[in-house]
Image (cartoon, rainbow, N blue to C red):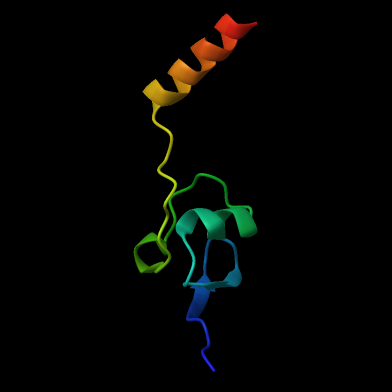
Length: 67
């Protein structure tokens, strides 16, 4: 049996699992887009890159043209 590593997070005041990504943890504990004190210790791999400003602007422009 394998137990996931976990530790206490001072930001959310709860125990958090470290075998996930920072983004998954933030969504689960409703932290939002803050400076995470545990960001360096998460072992999960995030295959979804953060959207860049250029990408989101391009997508918005394309949606507006379709209207």
